[in-house]
Image 1: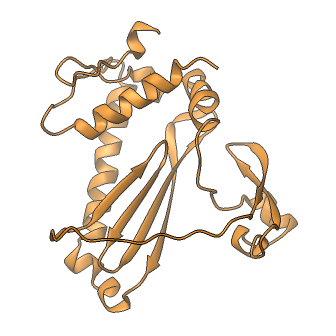
Image 2: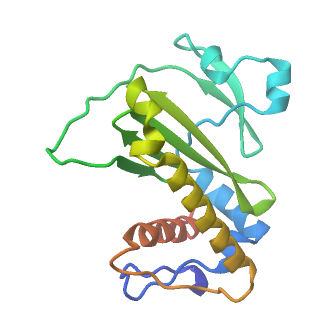
Length: 206
């Protein structure tokens, strides 16, 4: 394992991934081969060229069990086939929560609000390692609460703060001065977990 890719399991000793992890096209290609090629991924929206050939969305193409649709993920041509029936039961633990946030490695989050579900998908852009294509989808269960999402859950304000934070990080890693950082044991356990997952995946043998 390359020394600058090692993320110590002890958060008090660990360093972040190197800045080149966010700027180097070769690093992005390695991530595509070791992370995105080996994990379940949510299907992104169809590309403009795919829609020109067939204007229907993927959900329309695979409505029937066993139906197939051509898709492209990170410039890789694939087929999506529907061949299952699935569902889940939810549960409550008695706690009052602002929202439930569930990250699915490597690039998807499920945000459960009282108004419904927000699905976020973060797609790398081949050849552009310092940029990310962000998709989000809202599945509304309570229209009245959804109309008040900015008033009660501050959706727009939080989104704006997140985007500004990401821009600041981007400026830092592009500066050449931010080589590797450290983690706050109390506040950045999630970030440490993610950096370590990437580190292990990049160095995993075939």
